[in-house]
Length: 292
Length: 257
Image (cartoon, rainbow over all chains, first blue to last red; front, top):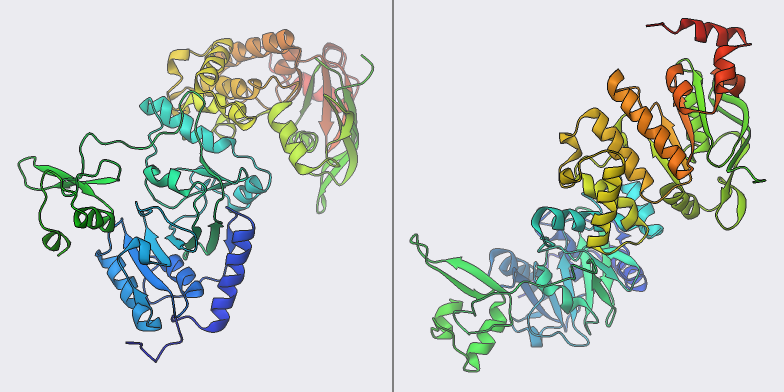
């Protein structure tokens, strides 16, 4: 059911063209933050206004949309953004990663490998990777222009000095195409390797900060590190309690006040698909009960 | 040695109706330490900022003897090259160490920053070099992971010096490096600076209003008044036999303890 009071995908056509121009420029210069005229959206800044505007600019009537928040299809943010686009565009929505042509995400990249023709859209709170190191925007832009990225390593150095290893676990800085330093939005560093040479187009929208950036398909994305402290992703001793997966990002869930806890896939679609195919974990229950 | 390290010629800088500095020129030779002295507002810091590439002068030219291409006008070269020079071949020691240090990260990160800026990517080796330099400026390497805010004023100043020296610069700019320290700490720092400049063959331009600092540390002295250099020469000569009335006033104003 389309709400006919609004233009297709809520934004007016001029705004969508403006955003598409910014996206084209972003794709042409991988990792470069393109300023754009971010609009007021019917939800507060910080709830995904950047991602929604990018999605609104690229969505077409034949697209299939999937929205995830922290890997999950059924959290408040994901449910409402999905409903928003269903109401303003009438496109089909899905929870299955493989069926989606557009995936808007907050905090995760799906476990199922993405394919060519899919677009992954990230909601970005703070696009500038050098922000907490250098307060001046004029200076950070100059540093990007001149490729002066030594400062980022100062942060990683500080991590090792304090914790004995690189303790940054999310929003882990990357170098895109050997040129621009980029903040991959607050995804866990577990997901960083998935960005490297991904066949899918990756678009990043920051609504409050009014920036769009992109990683085109098959672009090299390298996580920063030191030679003697190479980049590593998180590991768990446990497997998913429901599907037994050992290769996915696990959430730790407290189950009672006596110290009980279990680990479960943060990507709900990946977990359900595995269980549908017969995989079970130590606390397996029928799939209908878990997704309810 | 036939070319100076830094050649300054006819440098002027005005702030609207006010004069920053007027028609200043001098040559600085490798290993030479030169002092710029004068009262507050006489244009010392303006001149230092102009010659250190931080403030574009209205007139005049400043040439630096680069490692590969000889004398180059620092304001005609591209900005990336000037910034590269500023973090490799030059050092800048601020009067207030908090302006020159990154106060939110550890002492080790402060010293290692320039190394990482020029491409060092081996944590262990950065650590070793940092410890080395902390030793050289008489800081305890055990404090490598402490924040500079926990250091005393004199230690912060030495940390700032180590942070600048780590890329083996050939030229240091110092803006009143000892002004905010008490006298005994001043004496130690001056001693250290004198040792380092001699040992490393560093050239330096030191802005100071303290003639004792000039006497101890520098070979040559320039006295500035109202933006102009009124007298210059060998430090001892200028201080022992001042010619210009203002220099005479300055020298006679120093309290004898």
